[in-house]
Image 1 (tube, rainbow, N blue to C red):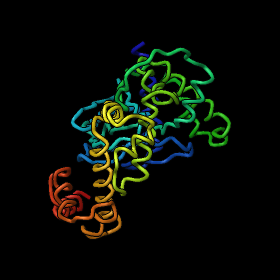
Image 2 (tube, one colour):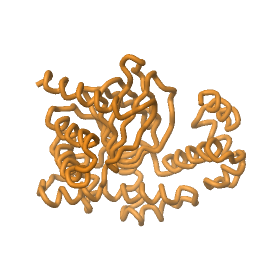
Image 3 (cartoon, rainbow, N blue to C red):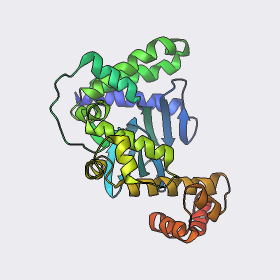
Image 4 (tube, rainbow, N blue to C red):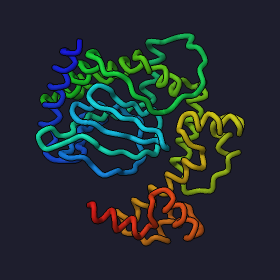
Length: 299
């Protein structure tokens, strides 16, 4: 079995390398599919990770969620089932053996439809679990991913065959050892799904004042249940989650749009420039201007 997996990984690595003309992420003709390549280890970067399946064909990456570490390589894939603020770093790559990764954005509505079509039925109630997990790669999942990626060589087949491959990938994920975690997020009456609603609301309204009572109503949970379940899924409180969204967006505004420090703070919801600078330094390890200078040097 391991030989079969290695052969499929080699083919996947060859395909990814062929369709990535340089370093960085590359969107493909298959809407939710992106291919990523880096020829050397990368600095730590912050971002908001949308729901996705990430499979490394070559190299290694480390992702951190509020102090928790998720290290994955060609033996393990990463699933992010809800939107999460994370830090990430490619730790193993070189020009001769670049880091090669496939990212497939997950559609929660499609996962819900899959559960409705094929089961499972009568799932036992389980506490909410992390919205990010690692699982062991196997030949069945790699076969399906390869079928999807090979379609890049025959673009005329994508419209007809890509949806079939995507549906099978969802099926394989749901039937995997950790698939219960995806099922919990997708089931409309589960507490994990209610936390997903709260997460979506926070991402759409992170620049507005946060009243926990309002967020609890969005999730249809009590305030105490919201706090407990939200932390179980995201590893942070709603307020900590909102702060990370605000500060990451402020960093993006200053870097990409050239906003001044105070303007970026106001844009993301801070009324006090001193509070903004203080919380920015706590998250990024340096005050805004110093951090921006560091980022520009890296770029």
